[in-house]
Amino acid sequence: MSAILYPVAANAEAALAAPLGRAAREREARQLAGDQAVSFVTRPVGPDFATREAALDAYAGKVEDDRPGRLVSLPPEDRFCRLAELAAQVGGRRPVPPPARPVLKDGRRWPTPPAAPVPTIWRLQISFWKIGAATEAALEGLQARKVRRAGAEADRETLNALTRQPLRALRPQQPLDIGLFEIRPPEAPHTVIADE
Image (cartoon, rainbow, N blue to C red; front, side):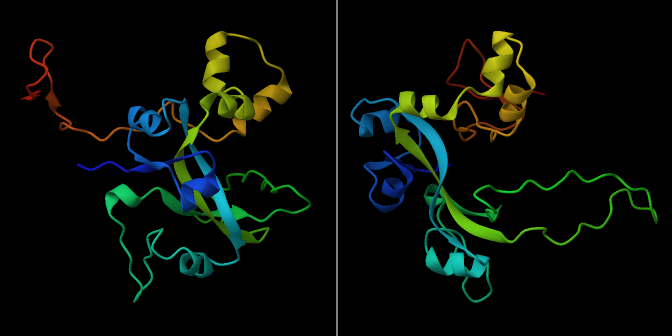
């Protein structure tokens, strides 16, 4: 099983254009960065596009394309870029739609969704190993799990800010090297046996 080889760079633009190298694991990324600290991040890069087709044309070969006649399937190790649909900024901020209320009408629990209240844009998101993990942590603030573990009481504004943060994993998910119903016994970790 091959893992995704993420670029190692100081910022998103460098990761897309000229990374120092590519690594699947943090240890390999640190070696490429000259034993500097690295953190795994996902950042938007490049201009905004009004349509998905325009974004796919601009980033041909970087993202998978499922359009008829232009089908592009990337190898697993090159899947570190993806297109994301975002709400367009209005007045310098991305608007948040109001929560939908459940409706029990005509045998349906939820109403039919209305048209998009604001125009959407398409933007390229790149996942990469960012050099300088200490500066990254200072820019993004605390994660909610760290605040909860500390046991500190938080005010309403802090809780709202924590809930609006994107979910970030502690580390990238590693590929599975054994099946779902297989285990490695502690006395022989080099052996895989069935767990049934």
